[in-house]
Image (cartoon, one colour):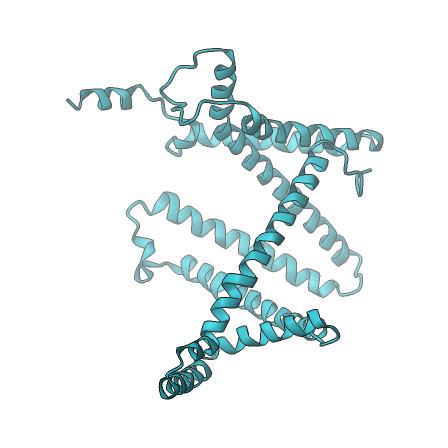
Length: 308
């Protein structure tokens, strides 16, 4: 009874991205990398008056499969892997749905090349700054050194975990090598800590902006300030505990359960469910419409700002 699944497993061909690493796979990857670099260099030589049309064309072609797959009518709950389309409309729908994975893979590959273009631009700018001894060129040396060190150690660590360690032993810290310790120190010990410090500094700017925005100048600002104060007080466990016990005692002594509504956590929950969540949904709705409009403008090439 289990013959059919095993036969189906034998029929499925091994895809390019599931091949075992070897000379053939590495050769194809090297060929693709060379072709991508040649294409990037060729696009960089496009005349200035043609660059806008190249960008518009690539943007339109990149978004067309997703828009077509979303708008084209397809059967509800159809199994695109086993079912057979019954007419031309369904054939196009099945084709678009099955093309999503390859298109997504191609998009990821293009993003990888764009990352390479960004890397090249970053290195060229800071190398020129160091070469010409421009202002703050010492920081450029630090950036380039850290950039190369993080990339080399990160790739080395990834290569060991992916191709060398086939048993998952490196998932345990006791089995780490020097490269794994260095990668952990650079990423977790330095990069993550600097990232946290940067966001901690941003928090002070957010606090300053919130103070300026919450100045009581109108009825609306007063309501906003009071609501924000209640929500912040609700995060103080000791205060909510003491105030809640006081309200419960007062309600029990006066036999008036309506007083329970004046507990800070109850009032804060009411503000979140009745005021905050509907407002957030309205904001999300407006942001969604704005993102849709901006996406259509970018996809159709109607957004001309910054493109020459």
